[in-house]
Length: 131
Image (cartoon, rainbow, N blue to C red; front, side, top):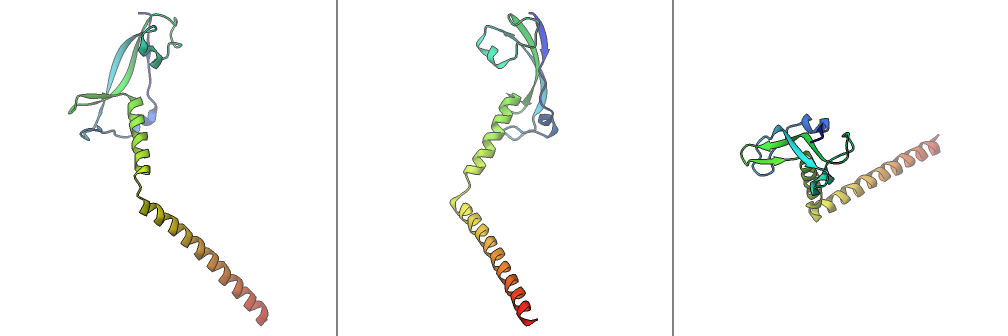
């Protein structure tokens, strides 16, 4: 084994609490290590440019999230992908009625603005003709 390397997670991952997608229990952060050979298929997921040698085995240390209840480990990449999927599915699951209601409310707001402008112009014209 050539080198030991520490993979650090982005700070925003630890800024909020994360919950299991199966049981909604609070996830805890665990430090894990893995020995990766540069010729193995999983090497594409790791950065070998950080070591002295681009070939051979490298021991990586990194953080994962662990659910005690389900005994499941989530990598930071998996968490981010699941959160993005949930955000997209919420947008897709909007019903046609809510989309129509949003469009109608926008149109009503525009019509109110136009009506207010017309009333304002009429008042100014009225005041100009009176004086």
